[in-house]
Image: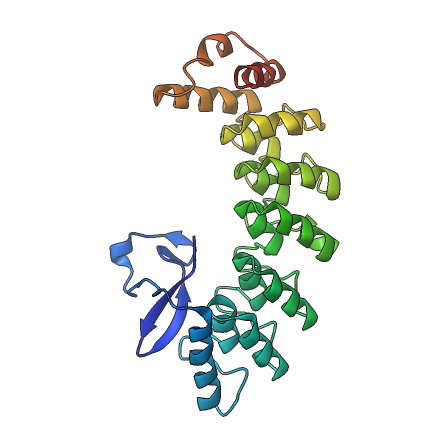
Length: 280
């Protein structure tokens, strides 16, 4: 979900639409008005950022009434030039908002390599986690940006690759759940994440992939040595999860060609081999 900007008394702040304190709520219950960002070139936003900088007596750490520092605006809306000017003037590269976000997390979410490298030059904390426990690698694991994911793995400290979020999900859980096959392979070959690590729900990445119907990723994890029998905390086994997904999709009018053959298969290894051949 993209950051949006709310305009209130000529001040801007960032809000995740539809999310308050990590709970999804009905849009009409949000009192803050979410408006679309006009198509404005980053250079124009730079002019606005510079004007606020001057009005604040050249304070690089100026924070508006909504708790948003100028550096956040520069990263989200402006060019690398405005971010560099603020950082060189002494802006805090590690400011953390009430949501737990930071300049580093914003830059990584944007995918702008110039801003990412700039913040590295100014010693931004690249291992920082937001209020949900997600770090930069977690966000890229969900977004599926493979090149940036590979870059971060080689530049972030090892602890970032091994970190889990509030729900206990590792990078491997996230790449499996979001159906990013290449990043799953990268996790298996470039990190020391235990393949059978379990999140707070007791799910392994293998089981999570099956619950989401990502059978190709599940098969890759299986061939890499994942335990194919571990249930979650509710007792749901990988086989039960796979069957439940197939039946649900069949009821929705999908996977009808797989169901007849799948019904007679009693083990998960054979089922994954069968599904892979059917989808080849």
